[in-house]
Amino acid sequence: MDLLTKQGAQLAPKNTAEATAIFRAQVIGKLLTRVFQSHGDLASEIRALTRVHHRPPGSSTTRTYSAATIERWYYRFKKRGLAGITLHRRQPSRCRSEPRAAGLLDRARPTSRGARRLPRR
Image 1 (cartoon, rainbow, N blue to C red):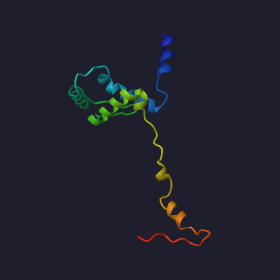
Image 2 (image 1 turned 90 degrees about the vertical axis):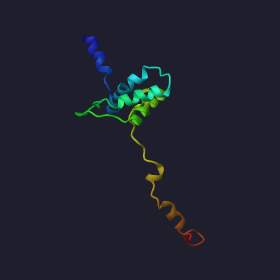
Image 3 (image 1 turned 60 degrees about the horizontal axis):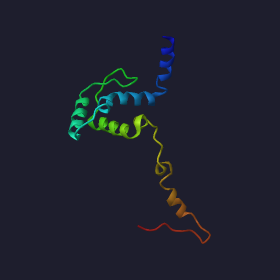
Image 4 (image 1 turned 135 degrees about the horizontal axis):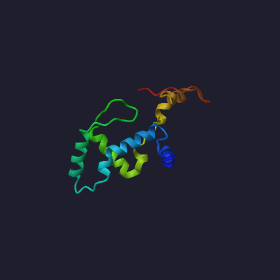
């Protein structure tokens, strides 16, 4: 029994993102184990899952998920496995990290030939 306890501790999620990915895989697990003959069969199973209440990790309440969310998890898992449904921190886009006026300021700075004027509208 001690061996199982030690192995079980190793199989526990390492962080919140991994716990969420495992939870999502459990939600769509019923879809992953079936072979669907048509897209209609998959859609009806997804609709059935939208009516089931699930308790996310770390939450005290249950909730349901929309068909679009479950379908997105399903196809991401099929394409990339558990990594596809893992939470990732979003990187700020390059456009948002730089001030919008930076380009305007560069053009408006004086050059060796004298001050430039901004183009008129």
